[in-house]
Image (cartoon, rainbow, N blue to C red):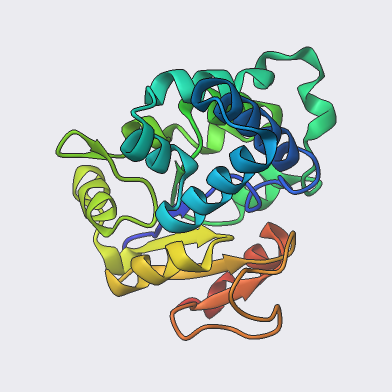
Length: 228
């Protein structure tokens, strides 16, 4: 039997983005919205949250409703990754690279974050060798339009490009909504909920479209055999 292909989300999956990075990104996005849409801080925060909830990415709402330049937005709101002090914002499990090595098969990064951010964070985590293939939001385009997770069309395109049968693929995520679409396409799904309670249901429950629920990559390494 062929080995699995593991598709890994980045933030709050491979590292604890809720520790400090998410707050930093929220702040830079709000500041961008204030400047470029000329709204106050309260309105900027409302727009950021509502577009993220509606589209799965704040960027999509800003592009569709306000004509924001996508690449300009991504660059300005994530430029903090060039700061030498980035390491102070990152918290992750000890021995993460070793834990990933215990999962047999290919590993591909699949994140709604921008490419440069993903590159820097993955290298800071010391796991870049595990992810020679990476898909960031810039690569998530279908027919010329951004289609980040949870887009099923994007997932179909990606599976075809990588030559992966859905039954031999696993999506590892902290987002229940992203897993729901992947499961409908036939992928195995792993929910990582050790950083924050997952929106929409209590921490102890497991939706029917989640094949395995874990708190950490270490727990995934121990329990991977439960994925049939």
